[in-house]
Image 1 (cartoon, rainbow, N blue to C red):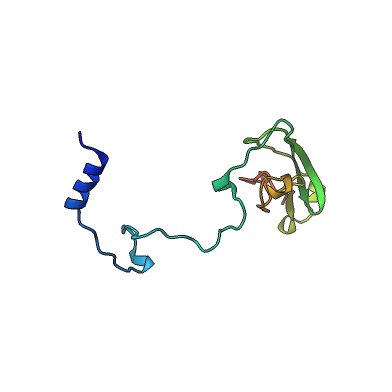
Image 2: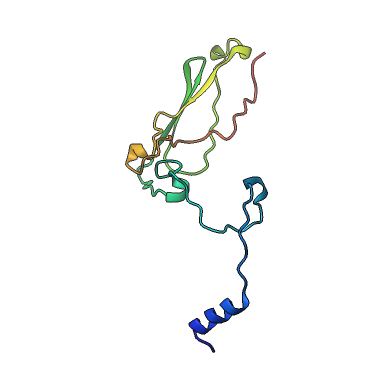
Length: 140
């Protein structure tokens, strides 16, 4: 076995230094950087969960949801724990006077940002997401 310093010496003796070549960014795929690259500013300029992470205590979690049709509340629910949840409701015909002009709104009044709960500067609101909306029947 050889020492670290002997190993470094062997590498210096047998490896050759590569020349640096300026390359436009669009041609840089597959190349190796000659030196570290640093951003001039943080982007975004606040802690972001995809890199920094957030811990949430869900024992007292509640997310309210409202389904509003043509300005009137058609359904309301409370989700008491995180995860996938499916909700279905029947909408009164009286709210669907003109199917071609029906306005359906989802409201999440409890939505808040990490900044709002003291978990960083991110101001984007976190709430539930509607993955699919499928009206089974519309009156004709």
